[in-house]
Amino acid sequence: MHIPGFFKVEDQTVVEQFIRENSFATIVSQGSTYPVASHIPVELEVNEKGEQVLWGHLSRANPQWKLFEQYPEVLVIYMSPLHHYISSSWYDHANAPTWNYVSVQVTGRISLADGAKTWESLRRLTDKYEQDSENPVSLDTMPPDVQRQVKGVVVFEVQIDKIEAAFKLSQNRDDKNFQAILEQLNKKEDAIARLLATLMKQMRERIEGTNS
Image (cartoon, rainbow, N blue to C red; front, top):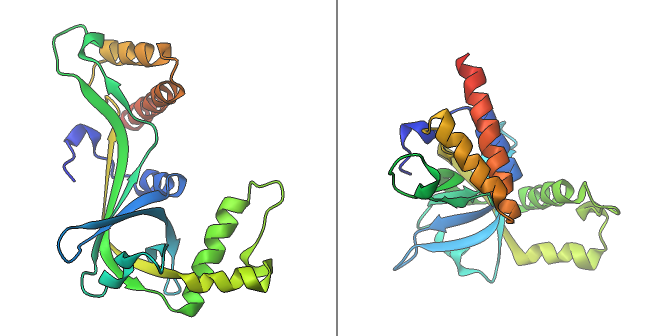
């Protein structure tokens, strides 16, 4: 991923938190003719060896998993739902319009999981997203006919080779123009724009705190 220096994030704590909070990802692998992609939750986990890995699953009906053995190199893309067009009219000088966004890309080698890891992966996934439910459910206590549906998915593990993070949040703008961007985003009726402005401000404060 091309990342200009202003926007490159190497703080692993920040990157890992982002992945955990935005784990609905796109997994891209090579196909017989064109690349193949699926949109699924892919979780940052620690396996039985104590290694930091990615876990996810595909439906057995999805042919992408059948290509993993032949083409094990994969790209997993995480995108924040917070992104927005930045107009050049918001600056006090002539400049090109742009787009602010946050993305993390993980590259690695994929392998299919065995039965025990399949269950553990799905159990952790369910527990993570059920914890805020009014009446949380657990894979361990679901009826046998529901548990048997586990056979309909294929769980995978990605051994991580590289993690790259781009937080493009106007870090390259001076204070005056940065504040102007925040003001324009906060004027929008679009909640995403206002949330992005908050994220930009938080990142600015973090950078200033690090540099002070």
